[in-house]
Image 1 (tube, helix red, strand yellow):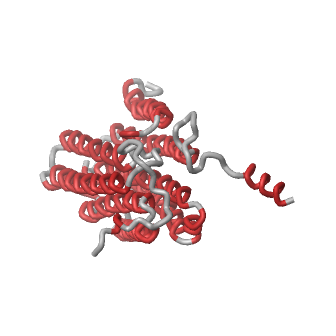
Image 2: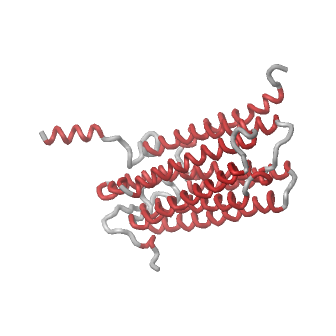
Image 3: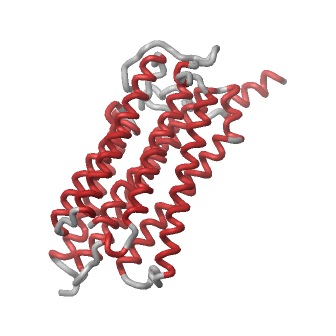
Length: 125
Length: 207
């Protein structure tokens, strides 16, 4: 079977190099793109292994609830980093995208802390 | 007359849909999808916050694996991870100028999404036969709300992928870079859907 990545249609604009991993660069060589594809496969293997580890630890070993929450959330955060960093290219994005996300993270943290504040000072008590 | 028509058409073109806008450094659709995803984070964030509130406020809360089908959900997690790879591979193939393999990978993504939905249907069917409905208790209320909303996002993604596999692919003939950018944008949405499931799966099924 031929490498599908090797088949570049004639006449299509595959430009010169302008930085590895920058998803906004219009100038990636075919070799750079194939190199990125190998990274995607590695990330996929990592995600599959981490999924197996999560299930094995929390479901197989039947960890106590507090331990299970900590283990599961740490592994989920690592998986989230892999997806966001490599598949969504956040490791090499532009400042404007980071600006949007920083604002989002601030509001997200506020949302997550709302239940805590409720239990600390419940209404009506 | 033709010159006027040409100028009018150019004025209607959405600017910076292929090349990055100088002040932002990204093409407009990419900034647009990230703003949309930011709103999605808040949507799912509100529901996660509700889950925390319900769980911490309850006298007792069941372990997810005692109530739900973990092997099926694990398989679905794997399927979504595969679909994330196939969509990013589709984008890479299109950047290489290879429409044929780009469409094959888009088709694989759609297939993964459909497998996910069928499995979810089996899971819901089992719960309904066990008389577990959203009204049964808070656990199933938040379970059906979160997984149902996530499932709707999967369906939305399938519709968009089907469009780009079919009629939307005509753009490739006259503007391949723009078509490639569109696949990147829908890919970002799809990775977000995968990202949500990465947290939903342990929170609902394993804790």
